[in-house]
Image (tube, rainbow, N blue to C red; front, top):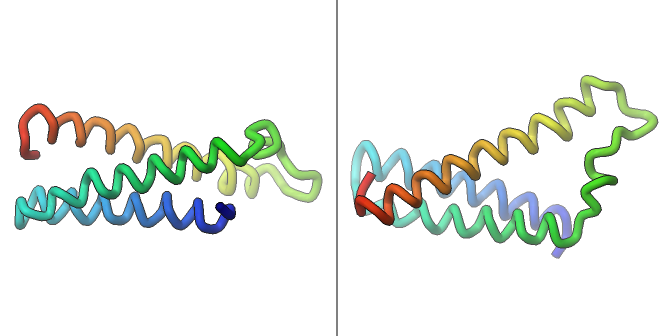
Length: 101
């Protein structure tokens, strides 16, 4: 699996999760089934990312890259993805225990 496909898998997984969360929480509860689907997509993308990526090389600053570009392109994107993954885990645990958000 290529790097571009992995990024799309993670991005679309987060997007589907958000659509399911917003529609399922505020309008129609039927759309809450999109929450686990988006979570599974994101976790599959994360699994493939960790499987094929050398994490030391991923977080190493390039010679031609300034510190601000490194900060936004590497650290902030990874931190936001981690925050979404934590939110996904908590939301799925709520769905499993209560059955509804």
